Amino acid sequence: MADETIHWFAGVDWGSAKHQVCLLDGAGNVVGEREFAHGGAGLTALCEWVVSMAGDPGTVAVAIEVPHGPVVDAVLDRGFAVYAINPKQLDRLRDRISVAGAKDDRRDARVAAAGLRTDRPLFRRVLAGDPSVVELREWSRLAEELQQERVRLGHRVRQQLWRYYPQLLALSDDVTAECELPPNWWTPLLSSDGSGKVSNGSGTASFYG
Image (cartoon, rainbow, N blue to C red; front, side, top):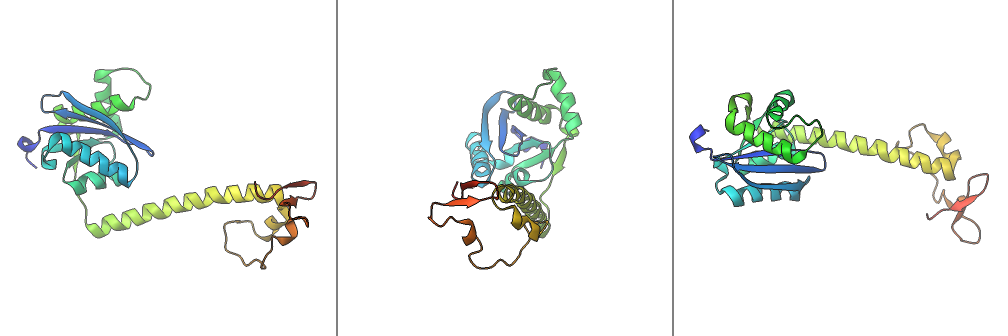
């Protein structure tokens, strides 16, 4: 994309839960700043917001630290020009504005946008990859996230079993592993009066919370 077609510069300070965006015009004036939640709806809103300000996505260059991920894929799909920068180089650009070491999402988004406007050679253009490669990368990312969630839930299950039914932990070291349990295996845990109390060997606790 030729430089003369770029009239707007957006900086994205991305995060796992939210993304801060700053949009500059060709003169470097701040046109708008806004925070968006991570996720499909949030990324769609991000793109819509930039388009509402700038109009044609082809006239917008987006600066971001990472060259891949959901944010990059979303803005590429919408037709924006995407540029990535090494975090260390972004730190040098940040020092031009402020020497404060504290994390500031609004400042970082503005620095990325301003740096792209004045120092574009420091940035690397990110191009959309082969669709099959993009899909494979996303499936791989999803598998990793699900594995992390499985580990997290496994820790919670183990903690609850240790509190209320530690005998079950003897069946397997991995509480997330598939195993066959007898039907209504929890019945012996319930008190005969149906009060929802269970015994852990040294006392009783509520089975329902």
